[in-house]
Image 1: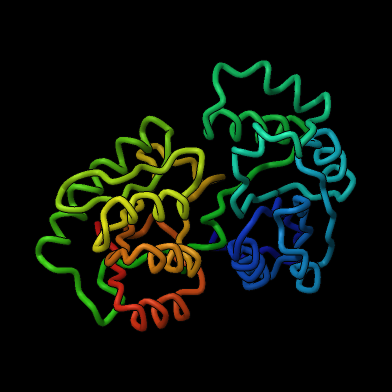
Image 2: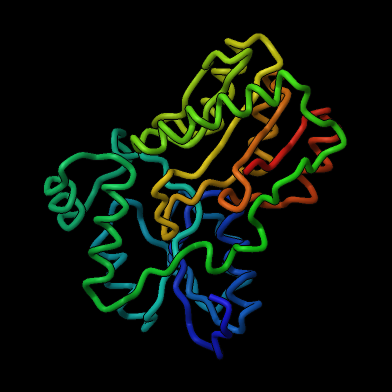
Length: 274
């Protein structure tokens, strides 16, 4: 979305992490205003200080979310921040009738199926769901090594090997991250999310693991755009992983300067690959 927004009010459904803040900056840079619909227990509520409107929405209350979006008057909305699918299987989330009906209508409960269905319900109300990447294009990983430490020849071979595996699990809508060592898969990301997969795979690798993250081959850029940040590095440090490799132009790096500084101090290599 390269054109200016001319003071247009854009909606943002916010989950966990720093990405909602990055999207907010992107909207403001284009001259837009922002109404945030923060998911309780996930969204960082300090974003309220940086936007024009803030609405707290209990997770699972799809009907309330849609009503609040309509009442705000926004015509375009973007999603940013992780919403762990594991919440569906805990007793802490009680879906409303609208959400229950939607879940029981699905052919499966994969990430893409659930999110596409939710966005479909929102768009039924005349609200267009726009791409997260419309506001985060400058944050995409470049095709180069970003750190002082450069991957070794063996680690580069692991990146190539891991990228093929990551794309395949992405095609199957399982996850977007794989942990490898010496061309062997230590862990693949599933419902637990990237950080837990990294810790598990890194522990099994016994140090020196290579973490590879890609977009899904048929990535819907309206949701679940792959993201790495300082929390990813902390998970890697906890298991002595050595390389973070992300698909250039398709994976977002949030807090890039901070991440690179931390990676250098940890002697972790961060590289964008094509």
